[in-house]
Length: 284
Image (cartoon, rainbow, N blue to C red; front, side, top):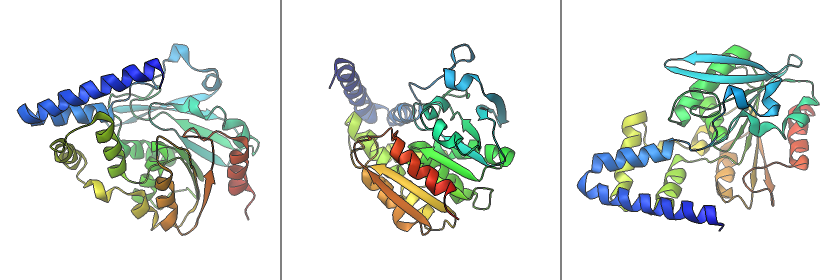
């Protein structure tokens, strides 16, 4: 663990201790603070003035959805359209290494900035809202392919569950979590939150989204999918456990699963991308 990571670790533990203290004296405040920490990204913002090079020569578009605005970037190509959905504390620029592989197909490629990430508005990130952003983009661009990384992959899976009859024919999921419960458990463990905090945090989700944590499961959602899927997950992923990818693949009838080794959570690898391209364009 480096110095910066060490400081962050100590800070998280201190915050966790404070939330644990609040759980006894002000449970509502403790739940509010713990949810805010869980849902507010600390990294991934972009400004128009300092866009990464990869996003500069794109056609950009801003969508309005209720009180939200979200940003898309388009690399023009042929009529085949691919929608790219990034993960936590990231933005559309994360696809820089992926783009050259996809562009060989001549496809039009559209990348989206998640809620509270990139140039999209808001402070709070959550999967249901991300799924709504995805749906607006799907309705506008009619992509036949969607590719999601990490929690972006989970949002793609949730979107497919909510809106099964769209233009999407194939989905690629890289390093994605299956169960919201697993993410919450990881978060509770990271902050060393006490047992009193677990129901407080879970109730926060029930009240906010009107679903129980155990109902939010990629494994459950994928069991009804008819589109073709490719799920890839790295054995050494320390951010989202390998078993999460296996869960999604286990019930998805029309899918294939690729286990990689040594790529970590980022999943950037020429060999893997070649397999993705083969899945997308070589099959009859």
